[in-house]
Length: 456
Image (tube, rainbow, N blue to C red):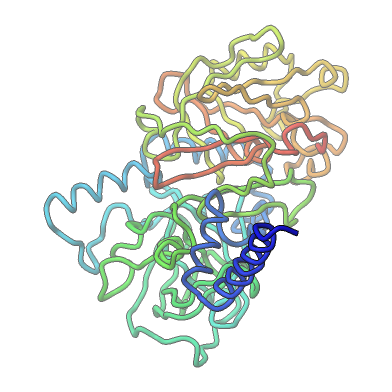
C-alpha cells in the first residue's frame, strides 16, 4: 500500500470518529444537523387525529347536512369571523403603523366572540370536527382542533388536576364561540401534541375551564389559528402565544404552516388523519405540492380562499369558470354556486333526494359517472367518480337508505360571481394533502394514495 493510500485511510477514519464525537457531545451541532436534515418538513413525525361528525351537535342534526353547510356558507358570504391569513397581516400592519399594542380586554374584532350562533363561524359551527390527543401537565385530554381560534384549553369534560409541572398565572380567561363558551384560569406548563410521545412544548400557556358550555363530549380546544385571535381573552395580557408560535420560537418549526393528510372516512370516530406543523410530510403525497396565493377576491380573501376552475368528464364540460372560493375543513360537502350545481346535475343525470337533500344516483347512473377536474394554479386535480359519492357505509348518518348512492356535490345557495362561488370541504379534502401556510399567505394541494381510492 502506498504512503498516500495509508494517509488517506488514516484521515478518513480520524474524520469519521471526529464527526461521531461532535455529533454526540456537541448539542449546537446536533441541533443544526437535525434541522438541516428536516428542511422540508417538521422535525418530528406527523400527529394523528380523529375526524368526527356531530361531536358538538346531536347526530340527528346531520340528517340535514345540506342545510347546515349552506348556513355556514352564508356566514362566510357575509364576511363573518375572518380567519384566513390576509385579515391578520393587515391588522398587524395597522398596529405597527400606529405604534400601538392592544391591551387586555381590548375586544378586538378578530377574537372568536359572539353570543349566538348567528354571528360567528368556529369549531362549534362545524359539521365535521377533528380531535387530537394532547397531554397537558402529564394529563391526557382529547381536544378539538380549531384553525379558526387560537386559545388552547382543557377541562370541559375531563377535569384538569394541577401538579408541580404547571403554574397558575392567576389571570382569568374567557372565550365565547358560536354555540359554546368557557371561562376559567390561565396556566403555563408542558404540553405535548399527539399524546405523551408526540410534539413537545415545554412552557405553553393554556386555559383550565371552571365552566364550559357546548363541549360536553370533548375536553376543550387546541387553537391553531393566528395569535391575533387571542386578543382580549386573557386578563392582564394583550396576546397569548399559541402552540404554533411556541413551536416556531423554540426552533421546532421554521414556517407557520399546517399540513393535513386524510384517509377517506369509512366510519364514525376513526383515527383517519395526520397533522404536520411547519411543513409537508412528503411520505403522504404522490405529487409535488401546488401552491397558490390567497385569492384577492372578497369575501373569499378573508379565509383560506383560492381561485379554481371546475370541468366535468373527458369532454371538459364547464361546471364553474375560473372563480374564487375557499378551502374549509369545517364544511362537510363540496359546495358549488347554484348555476354550477345545475350544470353538474344535468351532466350527471342525478335527481334530488328529498330525505337527505343530496343528489342521488341509480347504480347504472353511477357506472357512467365521470371525474371532475379542478384546475388550481398550473395543476389539474382529478376528483374521481368514487370520490364524488358519500361513503355508503355511513348513509344512515344522513338519514339515507343503506343501498342508495348519494353525491357530495351540493348547492351553495348563490349564483356564481358572488366572490365566494365554491367551498372545497371535508369530502373533497379527504382525497388530497392540503397545506395552510400563514407565513407565505398561500394554500397548497397535492395528490395522495387516496386520490384514486375506491373506498366509498
